[in-house]
Structures are given as structure tokens and as C-alpha cells.
Image (cartoon, rainbow, N blue to C red):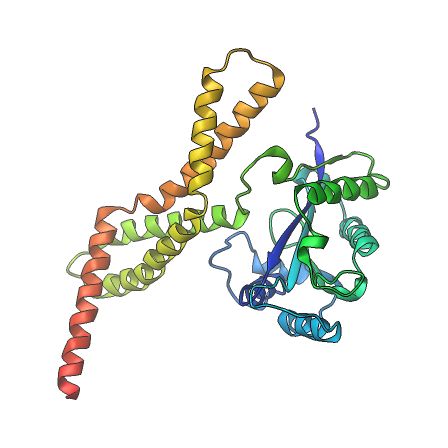
Length: 323
């Protein structure tokens, strides 16, 4: 039985410094992508633009906003990013020209509802597991107001976007099914990059445990340098991930409560079984992420504390000599 092929459209809003971060990711301006191990830079030459950026994202956004004479606040959304893709099954067996045709059609859809002049960049990534497009635009309305709220909207508007996107794309690809947004399913949307970061942290943890187990009098100096370098990446990475996951604490408690209520509920209608499976999956995903940053092995923590103490002592000695 063939798996369903879904058309997927999601939006994200960006206000300030993070605009530079999404540009670095989208335009592949970095040599390495440690937080996203799915990026295969040996395939990055296969990526292509449908809309080529003329200048830096933030600079282009500010130019458009100034020309429109919009009033802005520090927390104004200056860039909206549309992520366009389909389920992996859709792309299987398709040639690059066919993949390109899909994303060109998606750009035509966006341009039906958002002025093409506001689009900063539309770039297709072929160097990750599933082809996808990042289309970034300045959220200027037809009457020249800066309002991501009016364009992307609330739950109702997001459902409208998903409906219209599917209606547009299914004309050329009849096998496509309508994707569901987080706002419709009640699902807590966890960005895929968090799972990638967790996997990267787990690999670093395993490497550290291996290095710590290999230390002996003959290789202590060399291994210590490797351990120190890895610790300086791993521990701060864990701390950053812990901060990111705190925003899901309330969602996690809500899911636990819903899960308990569903278990007590009688009956096994198709809807209730489906929801129970969805809640169980979401709980599992959040628990997997929490485990990645909560269960730091004690030997790694001890090594990090020893290294920190050593660096502090060395700094104190240097300060004493400088006086």
C-alpha cells in the first residue's frame, strides 16, 4: 500500500538578530552545520534558487519597510518564512526538473496572495533528507502596512492558507493530499532542528564517554586536549537545548493530563484512538528530547567541572603574575 503524499506549507516569523541566522542556514554561508547534521555539504551544489536575494535579508527587509514608510517597533516581525515541502514519498523517483516544477508552482501560489516584490529569497535545499524550499518575504500588506498578523494570521487564517495551497497544488499533482497544520491537529509543533540538535548532542556525549574511557598515562596529554575541546562544545550545547525546551514545559504537562484522561475514557472510536496515538507520540518526542539534555553522565560533568576549575586556577595565576 502506497503511503499518502502530503503537500506541506508552514510559516515562521522573525523579528531581529535571528533573521541573520535563518539567512546563514538558507543561503548556506557557513562551512559547517554542527547543529543540523542532516545537511550534507557535499550535495549543497545541487541547491537552487527560484528567487535570488539581491542583498542581505535584514537589509532588504529594512529597505522595503522604509520605502513603504511603515512605523516599526523593536519587536515588529520583519521577515516571514514559508517552508514548502511534501512528504518524502512524493519526491521518490522524481528528476530535478520535476522537483523544480513543484517548487516553482509553490512560488506562483505564494505570489497569488503576497506581492512578489516583497519576496527576498526562495531557495530549494536538495542537500538534506527531503527537498524543501525556504521562501522569505517581508510581511507588507497590499495597503503597505507591516503586519505579519494580517498575512499569516490566526488559526483560522493558517487553515485557510493550508486549504488554498492544497487546492492550488493538487491541480497539477492529483495524488497530493492536504497536509494538516499544528493549529488544526492540536499538535505541539516541535521544529525538526531540535531533534537534529539532540542527535548531535548524543553523538558528542558518546564520543566523550569513549575518550574518557581511553585515557591512560601514555596518551593522557593528547586525550585531555580532545576531551577539553569536545566538552567546550557539548556542555554549552546542552545548556542551550535546556533553555529551548523550557518553552514546551506547559505543553508537556497538558499532554500528560490529556493522556491520563484518554486512558480513563471508555470507548474506542476511530477519533479517540487516533488522538490517543497522537498524544502518545508527542509525549514520546518530548521525553526523548528531555532525556538528551537531562541525563548528562556524571563522569562528563565531573570532567567539565575539573576542566573549569583548572582554567580558573590558570587564569588566577596569570593575573597574579601580571600584577
